[in-house]
Length: 465
Image 1 (cartoon, rainbow, N blue to C red):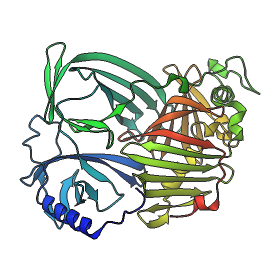
Image 2 (image 1 turned 135 degrees about the vertical axis):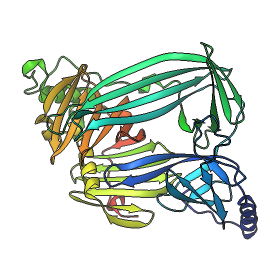
Image 3 (image 1 turned 30 degrees about the vertical axis):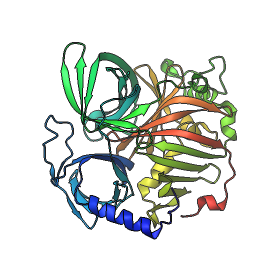
Image 4 (image 1 turned 90 degrees about the vertical axis):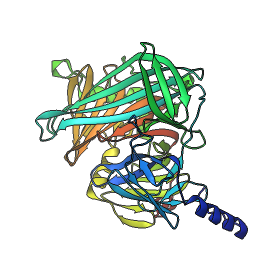
């Protein structure tokens, strides 16, 4: 969808007339995700779900019992522009010929109408969330949590739910640690009944709950909207042959890889074990990387990394249309958003620089000097290795089995977490295909769909759009 299609004059007229007729009213629930960038927290996702009525009123409170009649405010339509207030901000959207609402400011995004359904195919849906508390200046450790809530439907009227989570515990910048604990529980099940705009869940203990419920098919967002929350459909079975967790080789050590005092492994030992699990000396042969990913909110990202040249570029698209580019070149950089180019903020430079020292690339011999200078601590059975890059704290969370679990870093006193899962292997390199990143308030899930190690880049790859 990168190219604009040339429309016949008659088709254009018909669509224009149709859009004008439709512009008199909206009726239904419209959903979408807006990508935005903040000075200190980088890219964030805002999920939007609004119920518009044909009487000119709307509500964004789909999680309350009287959502059908609740009025958050009024919306107006003038010259094909829909205007309303969401989360204290005025939103303006253009009503397109296909009935979608297209944003008119910020990074382009679309709201589309979701469906009322009375039947649902067997599927698993997942909602991710994140939170944090405490931290700098509070006298309390920073606690960050990722969690997933799962809904299982068998397509025959039965459902069950699961919940899993990862908790990180951190201290202040000097000497702080982050620890992890994963928990999973399954304790609720029962039957469900669908009616237009609602689902009734009858639990095995007799409890009956009603929720607002809408559906977006696979050719759109492939999700359900329950009480205004976004649950994305998950593959119930993954190809096991293509998925593996990195397994440490406990029979080898390298150099000064020995136990530190107090029984904790030294930074050198942790580095050795991680490298063995994730590709060994093959990691050092990586010079460039091109990674293509899918991001929460129907977004796509392409990341270009050149280790030797210290260059990093991130391109964000939606439905093939380029929305944003951020590029770091040594200590300098720029960003391009909707045709406007400007220098990178200092916080953006810092975050992009720190990204080179995380995950698999952070184990590279050209990038692991800071890792080796770090300190090791233990929390809830995990090993935490803390080090600094230009006075910014960065942490590796490593399991007792020497599996890479997560990274965390702090910029401008704001903590950020990245939890890794579903490791896959290519060219001898084992890397996480799914990364969940959060600032403690918003979570972005990045799923790698393609990766190339050592591709040849040209000047064209680094030019501004």
